[in-house]
Length: 488
Image (cartoon, rainbow, N blue to C red; front, side, top):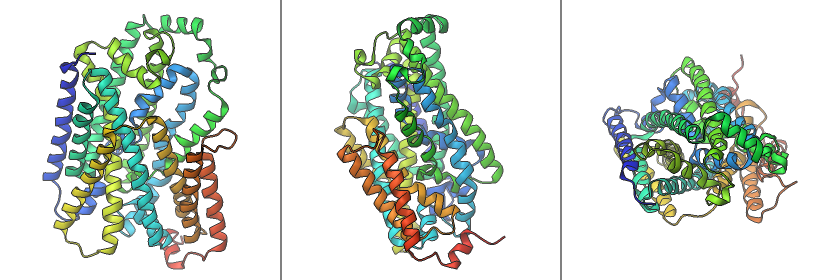
């Protein structure tokens, strides 16, 4: 494919706008309470921005590339499975939003690890939590960098390295400069662009395929299995069950989502975000996967004919979109990659600066904190960027591995820690360390239970270890319980 400058011009404008937002935010950032501003936007996000930044961070490049590619292969069964994601924003903000916000204001928490440290009175657990966040976030960010750069290359004809440099370095720069508030504002813009991209692509796919009725009639004749929930064996019940856990129920405890609960301004904003976020993620999730199914109208055959499921959407964009609009269509999937990277990057940076460095150096001055925070964000992003220069294969699996690791580590700790008085330090430590190790070992060895994804083993092991620790360990002191569970 020849290089198409018109395809990257809108992207260049988009990237410049992202950097402009971060510079504007940095110039208007209050000098006082730098940490609160840089890592949680000084807890002033409104409902619309809160909804959009949560949606944008939750939606990754896999949602726009791997997901619809699987829908092309499986059919409506993939949508039936993926639709569970529609509940994710509503659940994470509904279950943790208000609880986390109240607690964060009680003892000026800036990160999820701050809350974990205060709940279980364990510096060791806090350090392990920060390590787990950075480790798995780097895996997820690598997947986003690689997926975005491959998509860019496939659609525009430019090299993989050009795409990586173009949007990879820009996202590291604007996140480092502007911090959480810049991330939230750019995420909002990214989410809006994602929706526009889906509408554009869906429209041109329908036009190229001869309309909805023609495509559906062709599918009924040539691919009747696509209308059956289990796709004649291609979509076994085990995938439904484990994916509902992996990308649905357990995502409520992902640190990058829970931290949004610390950042909102008031209860009205939280309630608005729950409704707006649910509608937006539902539209994007169903819309892009449905587009993957409709792609059969212009890409007959099977994914192998186009280089695999990850190439279905890039090939579709390159096939149906006018050259002068390709740039607009590609911004949507790249925005998903960019917003996920920026959201993870700022949380990973806070894990190092706030949860580790500041805990042991409490008298650090504001000037040094600014330099350290920006430098840490840039260094983490730079490391992931370098890793992505030699891209690993199986990006979708890397992303799912990281999701499962974070869910195994944090699900029970946050659920029990915030809603169960009997949860204690030993239970939390055993759950996080033991559960995460067991999950990683089963992933490395390929061991499965009833051919289910290893998240089922990890989440079960972390639960059992938590309960054992609660039985054997010392109860949480009354002072801490009074903070987290005040008598009414």
